[in-house]
Length: 355
Image 1 (cartoon, rainbow, N blue to C red):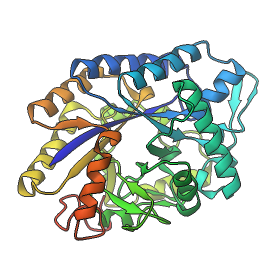
Image 2: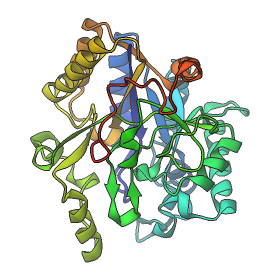
Image 3: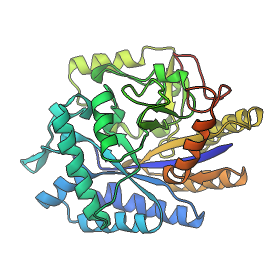
Image 4: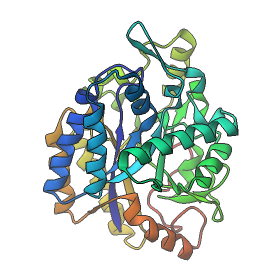
């Protein structure tokens, strides 16, 4: 059984450039209209650290629109989730530009006390936006997918009541940040974990539902549509060592291509899903939550999203959220005979060097 989950990273460019109206508000309004047409919901991963700083420094006149939009998303039953780029927490303005604290780029390498401070502050701000003093998001996505080393950050977030992570993309490798999700390629469509997000632990307090990936030859990555996103993606602006490490990331026969509904064209999206559908026909008993990722700043072709939703509906695939499927995930894992989060015949199990 397949359920499809659209996740949207709600943010401006990683260097702090761009306007909220152009990169966040207007793209999300387009998506709201499309999803309303299909009576469907998505998961909005709200990057709250940047929004808090933008509001505090009064640098973008669209901040009230964005806050109202988040409230509207919540009212329309889209899932509001937590997304964090901690380099924003100590951000300051200099010569009308943002100066971010890249010493805090990876939440997971910070001291436990600092992680707790950042998470508490972010949750407090998110609660103010949605107008719910006791609001606790169910799911989390780390900035730049950096959820390693996992132990301390996962423990802090679990203590705050967050239950699901969706940072992992199988086969992922970033030498600059020592991110390595290749070992997760042994796992199924979802799994419980504790101190290492790569390693299933049936007694762990956390659940991983990874971004769906396919391993492809590296030359398949730079499609025409993806090449248009160089500003928010790639090695521009990096130093020599960072560029060298980014090059090392690509020195593999195959590379993980995320299921990205903003960066992929319709042919790519439907081709991946046709393979998932074929796998499901061969193994209909296993539960298969398929997580797609998108970014507000990357939405340039809303018609593709609309057509892809039509494709999913035509093929009888349910569109869901983590909040909707959570109880089902718990039930499935309680009955599963193996610790890889599902059953031993999961069709998304691939060799360790694949995604």
